[in-house]
Image 1 (tube, rainbow, N blue to C red):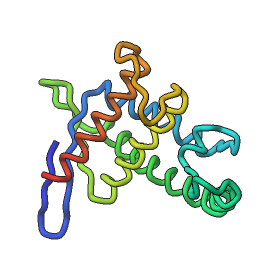
Image 2: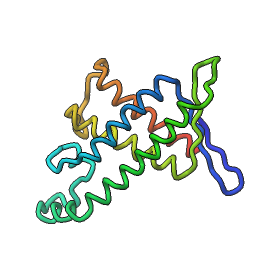
Image 3: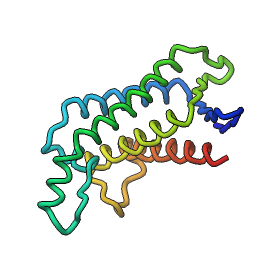
Amino acid sequence: MGHRRSGCDVTTTLTLVDGEVHVLTELVAQLLDLYEDADDHDPAIDRLSPAAYRDNDEASAEFRRLTRTDLLTQRSEDASTMLGALNAAAGSAHDETDGTITVVLDDASVLAWMRTLASLRLVMATRLGIGQNDHHDHDDPNYALYDWLAYRLETLVEATEA
């Protein structure tokens, strides 16, 4: 993974293996379905639009009512950006020597990927019952996927700092 500045354009290069592209594509498609079918009683949707006022339930409910649609629209646009890049990468030439696919992202796409990876982790954490300070079973494949998303997010952040 790398970060390159040429003129005013900044790009970040992300190298993924075929399996990673497939997993990310499936997860992002499921996330888009969640946004499309957003249920106000779904704890994952609540976690994606957290309370603005921890000590005032009424004010938090009003804030959510006023901002949830815009927030979910932005999250959906971010996920669509990521899905588009993944689909383009899957259709591109692969490095036959190691089975990798290179994805080149501009600054706006990098931010969309970061927000989408973070959203995926929030949804998974909600579904798995992981709180802020919970420890989890690193041998459970569901938690392994959760940790892998954190790794991918971390490597993307590090690439932008280089």
